[in-house]
Structure formats: C-alpha cells, structure tokens
Length: 187
Image (cartoon, rainbow, N blue to C red; front, side):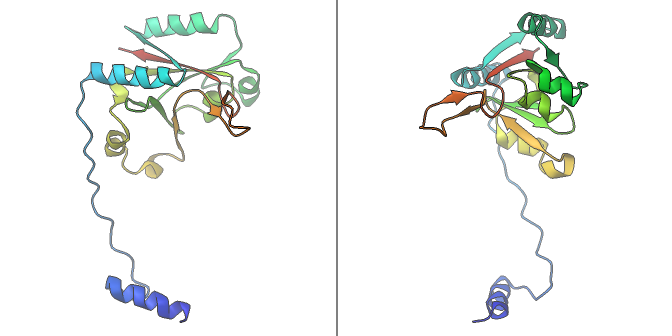
C-alpha cells in the first residue's frame, strides 16, 4: 500500500480532506490541588531537602540579602548582569526564580528573566523565590503559563542539585550543573 493510500485512510477515518488543517486541540482541563501557602512551603522544603538542597524561609528581602551574603562569604559570585567570563569564573550563581513547584521541590526558570548560565555553571546556585510564586505543582503552572513557548524560548525546571549515576550507577553530584543548591523563600 502506498504512503498516500495509508494517509488517505487516516484522513478519511478522521473526517478530514487532504491539505485541510487539523482542528484546534481540545481545552486543557487541569485541576490543581488546593493547598494553603504553609502546606506548600512545608512540601516544597521537604521535597528539596530530600534531594540534598538547602532551603530557608525569610521574612523580607533584606533577610534574603543577608542570607545570600552569609553563604557567599567572599566567594566569586555572578548574577543576572554578569558577563559570560564572570559566570565561568564564579563559584556562586545567584538568581531569582519565576515559580516553585511544591510537590517536586522544583524551581521554574523562564529564559526571559535570568540568564541560564548563572543557574547552571557555578558549582553553587542560590535562588531567591517569593513565597507568593510557590505553586502546588506542574498542573497549576500550566494553568498560569499554558503555552510556555509563546512566552519564552526556554522553560527550565531545576529539581535539586545536579546529580547523575551514569558511571557504574554511582551517584555523583555536580557533574551536569551545580552540586549545591540553596533556595531562599521570601515572605
């Protein structure tokens, strides 16, 4: 049977004609679970800490700045306005995060906000996230950002420090990204 004959049968069974555009996709029916903020914070911290990341909840941006300063403590640091060379030489990358997913402890980074290298290249990544942007999970994220490709060229989900067990199935941290992750949740 020829390619056109096979495609013709498929089109016929779908009720379409050659060259006709496909119908629009059905509406997305996501139902994020309803969890209060304190439950989301506890769940997010537990998920991240199970992956060997450190989380801290602070009362203000000033407290977040103080925490970041204490972790940095004189190490070479890069941030959003750093050059590629500065990022490559940095020991610590400091970024914000667009969202956090409580159920998996994931950070959501959209390419339009912080440069990806800052969160990927230095051995220590510190992300600051307002608790107001802490979502229950991926379903809630996709109700807020239903078509990520329309908003950004890249959406990265960071779930804990980088880890791999590719070689002899031995877990190693920091091979494909930062081996240490700190998340600062600001109220």
